[in-house]
Image 1 (cartoon, rainbow, N blue to C red):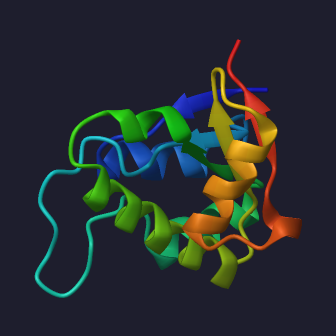
Image 2: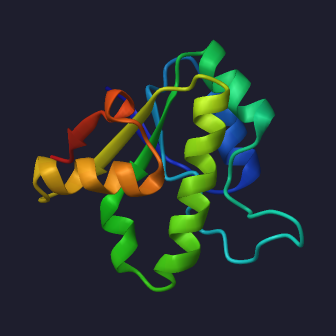
Length: 123
């Protein structure tokens, strides 16, 4: 499984267009300023359509929440969940040492349905 962390718009797009990538992890990473009318979450409808076409899942890292400004990060993750659901992109939750129940609860907080929650562990 090839998992790559997201970043800039250009990097996210190149990763989503690449068919060898399995998971784009934390596309919202490194985003500091939001736009006036919406959050700068690292995903948009074009990237979601490309991810669906190339079978690239979007990953949400639970461990990112322990950095500063977790309220803004949670909002960006929630927006990404809505986009992924709308464009039928597979979603995965990652963590190093959290229990499965914690990660299922985290998925529910983000707005995922129980059938949409896939959990993976970092090695």
